Length: 167
Image 1 (tube, rainbow, N blue to C red):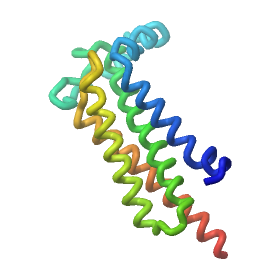
Image 2 (cartoon, rainbow, N blue to C red):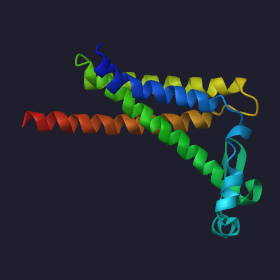
Image 3 (spheres, rainbow, N blue to C red):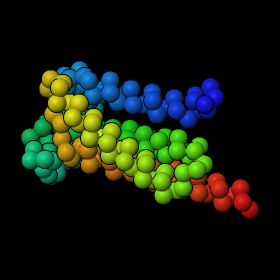
């Protein structure tokens, strides 16, 4: 494996995996962004806009009334972070497998999907050992969906590139 290949293909997903691991190793208090949200956003306006929104996420009520306006916003920011980081990871892992030309599209999709499902599961299991963190099956689902969307988009981009190079 050449240095250029490693830096271009392998280093980005490795750095992202380490960043996710580092983030998952922090306690909730270390990642709490509610004070910043309350400082920079109008919480009264957030409360007015979303006071009618109420649903349950793994048995916990998600609403402005139960979490406060900053906690309510933080919930969505955290789920977007789960989705987004795994979207990028799925994209990058599929891209790594593209380099190995002997892998068919189906093998790339299956391999990258298994990687995402396994990584999402291990990330939540890792949180069992972190104080004030709670592993959630629903987060594995959000992570996996994000990763799968990243895989599909990367696959479509490479199919388009392959089709353009044939014509």
